[in-house]
Image (tube, rainbow, N blue to C red):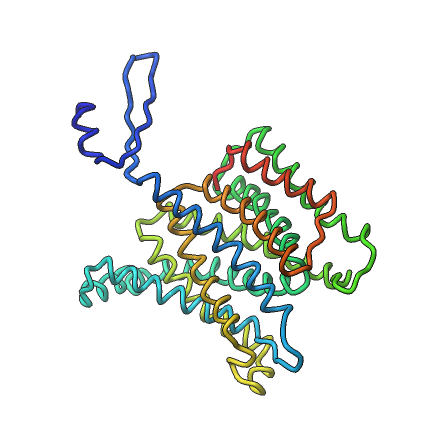
Length: 352
């Protein structure tokens, strides 16, 4: 195919990357059909969604009126999975041109006709359920910015699992950036012993619980993410279909977690006890987050996703300091935040 014909087929909004080969003096044109403006929109939505979820979730767990009952976090996780599954089903139904017979056949072929492929998603689904519940514990014991920066340790766990499971090769620069990341996470926790106790300061034991919850969530996130990536690359099913499978198992595991950990409390006060408008906003944001990440991966790339994560740290820190009043940006916190942003902006070699 000639270059002129190739350019014509790509359309007006295509982005072309020209690579010149000195050996055979040939040119390779790579056409990306995604408009750049759409990438920017996805980036902006991911920043807003990530920051809003963290801040809203923490607000819902730490701010309540006297005598007001707190909602059960495990039940919120179940509702988030249900919302995500329903949204993905709606997207699949739209892709089938709103024809019920096509939709049913597609679901039967991808889920019922391939039971082992479906069961493979039970592993990451169970880990994601554990992770989501741990994040509620973490945000109940840590300020929003500390949680955000500490949770970036999942990049390290993802790298380790990628090397072990996907046999990826990481150069010296990449490992150096991971070491810097660990230093930044350590600096975030360093400020606990340096601050004088205040009325708004979180307890030391609570912060220990929060940090342990985040570390466990990082491990589960790293393994589940790499495992899910391996499954996606080995099959032709759409990411929406995979999210349906993940979410379906997530609902089951989530209900099991509710009955195991909070069964007696649910029996006394009901499944929806303590729910209010903020609670439903948290649930909607958490479900929407799964769709946003999928859209970013599909329409943009993981580098933009990394920029969005770093930018959300800045947004969460600003809002947490000026509006929630639970974050005091000491010198070490500032260094850590700047280090995180610099690493994500300069060391773009990581693509997870």
